[in-house]
Length: 640
Image (cartoon, rainbow, N blue to C red; front, side, top):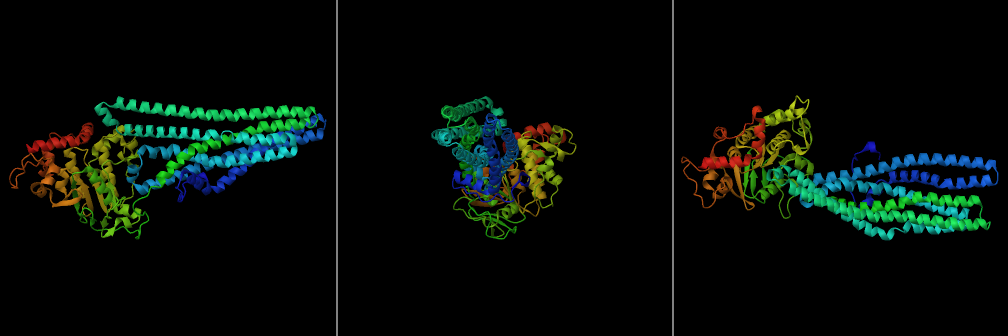
């Protein structure tokens, strides 16, 4: 596998029983690259280690005044230099290829797992942990995978040199052959402690990353309550903890490095002292002494890879364990499914709650518990169901039995906190779609006119709003503007069933009324389920379903349920038990402001709602952020 061939057509099925098994699986799946890297490494290290023999041969030729042997030594030295250059060049190329391809494989596996688990991933693993695994941990895993081949080549070279020295000069060769294994294994007793310190550093870094991501995500809210300094102090303390842990880890690794320098020096001193004694006794020649001395000097180079592989394994093992932990997470249902990958159509039905959404109708669902509403919305989309729950049926077909791609093509769920990726608006709206809904029509239905103008004003040389750039997660936009762009993206997709969870919670009542009208018109003939407690949306729905304590408690139209169902009225109008009941006569002026029709709503709230036209873009941004609060005030005033 070459870098230009990435991504992998299929990254494979990893062995996630443990971190070590996962590393072994990665190395085994890159066997060809490992063999190439080891071959070039052998050429490079062997050429480096052969230089001392050439130097010793040349010195002895000078002592013996042999020009022929001196020329031969020069030729051998030139050949070694060529081997060093070629081997090092292609070793680096093969090693980097192994590193990048291993990291790319892990990232593909993590991305595939994220798409399979959906929103269940962040419920099982902290968001900061997922970020750390997909960035820093991936690099450490790739480092170990590529270091294995270089270490293998270095180890084989050391063995070959020891054997060669024993054959070439047995007396000194035995000293080197006994001393080198001691050098290679001297750092082993320190590795467990170094590994623990590195793991602790990684844990603290993960917590700091999670704290930073949470702080950035909630920066607008923190500024609103003046909490920036508080969270800044928390992150500063977490950062200092990471620094202290990193210093403690670095101290241990510096000790290991010092040992790797000290022990070869002691061995070199012993070889020189013993070699001089042998030379004085005439048992070895000057050239043989120079050869053995130079060999010990050169062997410190391949011995460094023993330290590197120890560091790589110590850092990559906890990273591999965390990656394997994420990759071992499974959906509660099979992603391949047991049915053909045909997108079904028809009525949507949840057997557990009794929720029924007729095909081609707009169904609004009122649920007093927002968390329960979010879980029900996910279940309607065929996302991982809770233990003991029954699969949702679409046209009588269980979504859990469909392949994951088919289930998500049939039902699209937009949660209450949609994410906008950075890029142009055209790229944001470039999603799999039926082609029946044009982007302009979807943007108009979601009331995005002021958003388009704001994007053009904030972008340089963007005359077409679709070419305007959106910052990361749309942070340059208000909450309501982000919500409306996400709604437009969902409308463009035009799925068989569209499930919206509080799609207008961050917009003002005036805009909300027009969104309700636009969505209702654009989704005519398509099944739409909206989880909301907004009277403006509820009044536009073909049918309204009240879900209470996990079961359907009432079904009807909005105005009918407001008058006849106290539990529904308590959720929609925020009425308490101490407040008087609503009038039962439809002609009697009701205290339920929600019963104001969508046609009248713009008139009632026009005087108080923030402008959403091109002239009032700045005001719309503020209105979006406190839209829910303003809507509540307007309902109270209408009630009074």
